[in-house]
Length: 254
Image (tube, rainbow, N blue to C red; front, side, top):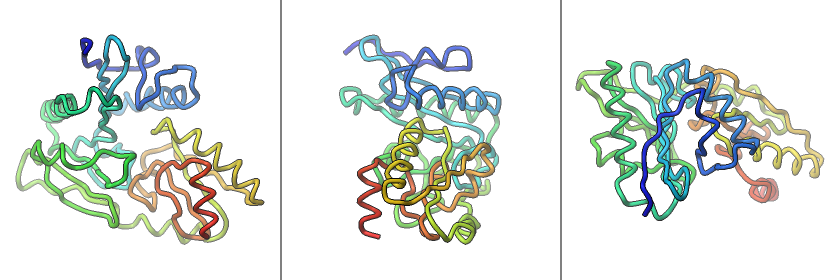
């Protein structure tokens, strides 16, 4: 296996690296995410990339002070992990995920935070909880059917982070038609929004698009994932980016 190193990205070098499984800097998702990152670096975001000599970017961890988190959570005082992934199979099970997490924990201690928090899911688009439990994080909150919030507290008496309990109120405002909330926090969202919007139009449905430009909006989303939500007639029909085929299957059932 080729030599691997961990790159600390910033606004100057981010265009030189792949992330989230994207390697083409000219891809729309890569471009939009890069511009989003440039704004977040000023808020204390860290994106560390696992870089292989032969395969390029093979993993990453993205974390930010909890008050700026783009998830429907309340985690002020904590360092919050948006994403942790190893996206090449041959690099999984080698301890790289634990190494990336170690950087986050060290940075959180250095910054004087209350600890580290992360949202996990049983779904395949987010990290599972096993790695975090192995490193001492404990479950502090849950949002059925599949989201959990874990935390490593540096002080045992520190208040726990939690899911935003007022988030479902937003559904009352969008009880007719198709509404898609989106952001550039995930590079897969741009393609999903374009594909779903076109598919909806072919069904005679005009999608209403609502861009999330601020972390405060993401923290108030009706689904825990925060950065993407699809609502139809007041009900959440997708809580993460979906393909055109997946959207059509959902609408067929409805």
